[in-house]
Length: 128
Image 1: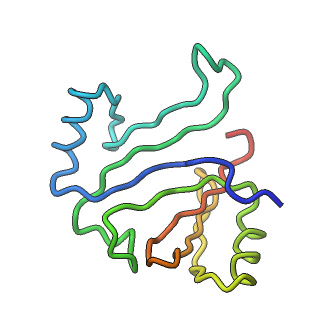
Image 2: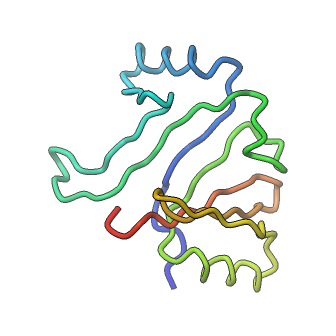
């Protein structure tokens, strides 16, 4: 069974997400989307058949989305089979959140690493 197949996104807390996003856009050229983050699509001049996206997104400093972790960041990892990986992680003694979210963007689940960092596991929709 494949485990992680890539980075789906990097999320971090910011005192002022809009201002910080604007700074990254101005100084590093990160193309912000209307929702405040950026979607780096894998297809491009050097990878025309590339399928997928890596998301970069600042969150409000008081977000509870990373809870129960107190870390100011969360990494989203792409996976092929969320349910199988969650079962394997549980069997290995990892702390796996019972909650799974499903939407048009795919399936999402969470696990805590040994240092208390919340990691998001993302199974993209077929063909993404």
